[in-house]
Length: 221
Image 1 (cartoon, rainbow, N blue to C red):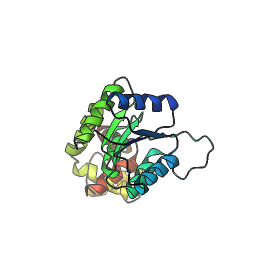
Image 2 (cartoon, rainbow, N blue to C red):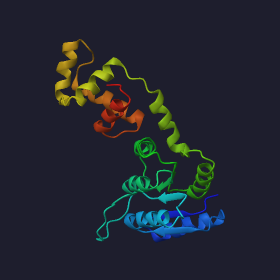
Image 3 (cartoon, helix red, strand yellow):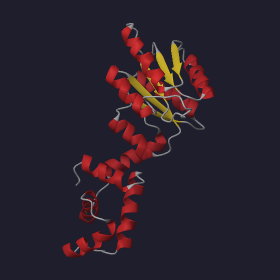
């Protein structure tokens, strides 16, 4: 199992509980930090002293209590940590409910696992630790279907035309004119808005910007 683990979590009770869970799994060399800057400093010191951490367990949201910080959240910490130690394993332990955000963590930050704070988080945390230790990614079942949906979603020419216009900066209310010019139906603004909402819901997005970025990344537009 892991030799040395660092926990970045600003809630004392959660921090203690995660430490206890690790202890139950006979992972005893555990350090913690309540601030992202302090967590990064511990990682740097570990590298300097020749005792690097094997795993970083971090929340995403950290409460601003007035102390000046360079790193304000878990995502920034992960980026900075990987700059210092590219092979560092990262497990995110958070209450973030958006599957789109979670998928982004895997795609953009290459995290090794995500555990959602909730009713089954003790079991999920143990399962995630075992999976990561064996070299496997851990994606919670609740988010797995959304990730699969993103891989199989089929965009029609109509969908691509709408999203393509948004990506070019066309105001949504002007898209009906474009569709009419191209002979594509339906052309009403309400139909366009309805279709965009359907696509975003299927992919777990809440904003047009997320949908545009997704389509650009996959060269759909």
